[in-house]
Image (cartoon, rainbow, N blue to C red; front, side, top):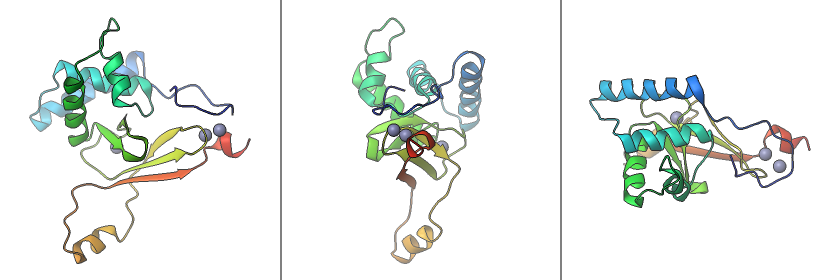
Length: 162
Ligand SMILES: [Zn+2]
Ligand SMILES: [Zn+2]
Ligand SMILES: [Zn+2]
């Protein structure tokens, strides 16, 4: 992922390729059938790009890389695909980065929690850790939650130990 801005040593990207990539796309396809939704070619292509990146991607990078031969997509094509992928839990929008990332757990809509390194930008999804009293507090305020995304900032191991 090209978001690394620092010179601290990092492992190679967490992106998928080869069999793990086709496996993940296949699993998404199966889940779409179960949800009675269609994994159209644009939706599949955007998910593929996110899985390959293994980290957050901005919409304009997805638009630029959309065509297999390097041709850019029409922006609405990518935005509609991102909308679908986020709604169905295949991907998450990370507000503070203004970027999207493939869901690491491939579950139906769940509380997404991200650790974001403030030094290199490395971002990883961790298993749902919704603030314990959020739902109750929202209910008490007469508010119905439709989604929660936790974006926690700190330093990844290489940056913290540098
Ligand atoms: Zn997720
Ligand atoms: Zn870092
Ligand atoms: Zn760093």
